[in-house]
Length: 192
Image 1: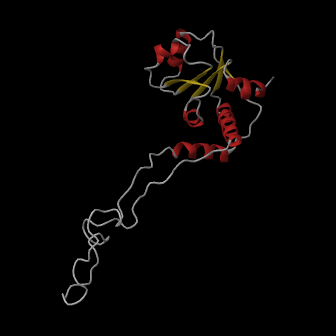
Image 2 (image 1 turned 90 degrees about the vertical axis):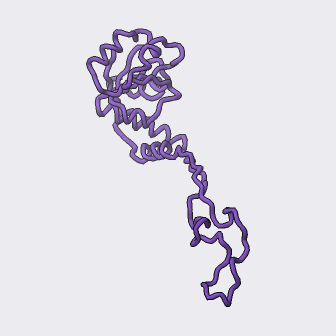
Image 3 (image 1 turned 60 degrees about the vertical axis):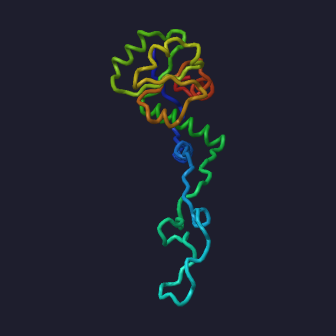
């Protein structure tokens, strides 16, 4: 049912993988913000006259040294998005596939023949392993509803396939109907 495959291409682009993982880590909220002295509520009036009081000279009460004053170099909102070029994304996807192939954890299967028994047998043979199924269309497959509560099994479509998730997983299984299989794996198989 599940056929292990190896790819001809053995090159892994560490740089492309790193860049695509950086993209995932840049999904931050980015809304941290502290008030500086211009944003703190309060008067800008001089607290007391410059000379004659015996105290050290003082400006307004919003200065950073005073309690309730502004923060000197606090965090400010800034854009944290990170762009990865198309060719680098493609290279990262190929590198993730090659990495799984080298680890002997890349498999293919026929989507029509996929049934409940074959998945449960796979889970029994590989307990406590993170398994990813990449299907052509998730919405049409009824098996996903039955296995969606399992902790270590994930069903992804071609569009939702992630390099990060694939690298974390122990096994990646591609449907022969999926576009990733047709574009990257099918013509890169050993022995074809």
